[in-house]
Length: 522
Image (cartoon, helix red, strand yellow):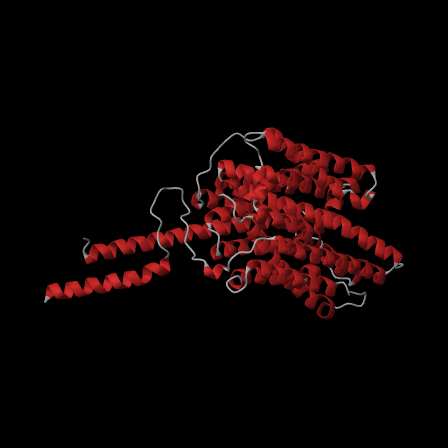
């Protein structure tokens, strides 16, 4: 039997281990959030700098399009491979590799002296982002068990990632106006170096990866298939749905994905085990993400166009006007874990979808005489708060019930469906807006009418995705589930109890020790 002093020392050691464990968990959250932030920021920040890039490098319209497409195509095409690589080799190695490639590519692009150098750098950025992004979400889903703690971690990831997309216009405008377009890329370098050092020193694996050979044929087919689809979708706006530049890559993409599914069905070690789709929460959540993503990710695009082309805002003013939208998404993501203690997740997702739909329909009433307070603030807060809840809950649902060995694959699949949904939505809604504006004549009112019609159609699409929520399985409220502090290392150590549980036992041990010492003294 341990003496009171030995008991006191043992409890103190365990309390110290619990604090160290919790500190390592927050290192994982911080690394995941920063990684996702730079990935999403780089998608939107480059758009503001395109006119300056064209003037600085003397690049034509065709080359300027590839500055954007080179990133989008490589990013979308390699997400599945990046997610599976995290499963097979561990998220720490893949996170460091992806962030290293992304940081080097940002440096190369910032120093580019010719158009081809910038396009190559953007393609490398897309490769690094595709490796990095699934690892950031897998880092959270394998470190935190299902329940409130995972929801809080994923909420932070969602909020920071979405905030990066919203802040892209503001950051890009400030850097371009006051420094140079090159800093739109170079700003990633110091941030990437700091996170690389921190990840190499403090980040640890929370499970033991089982390294196996990668399904190279499957990886090639899915990369060609998804990449071709992304390219074909990007050609819809300039060439129309029936143009050869659109139809050929779309057909190649569909054929590549069909061949990929056939190969995965037969290979003994598939890149994407098709059994993953038997988990209803995974298959339904990804289907909802494709549909709802067509509306979500066009939101920033049309709001920016409305503010600059109709209301006459500068790029910096547009970025500042979007800050309430950003803060609403961050607030909603943080509230998600608390709301789940009182409302079942499927019910909360339904309410979030209706809230988002209402915001989009309200925003569709925009006109040429709009104002920030009267036209943008109210519907912006409503649709952004609902979207923040929806994206957080969908990310949790799409990774629920998934084995740790397939966490990276689930994350890569979610990012792929979100990217494809956003690309489809942008092309579809841009066609809707252009057609409506052309039919309304010309001038600011015609543009506002076109943008409003795009929001109306997006709202109806999100309403349809909200109906799909009924297909998700019901889950218990997270408040009814006991939360645990997971062990973030792969070392076989006894699982420490959480700090709040140790505190009263520590106080009791101290009291017992004092009583026995006083008794011995008497």
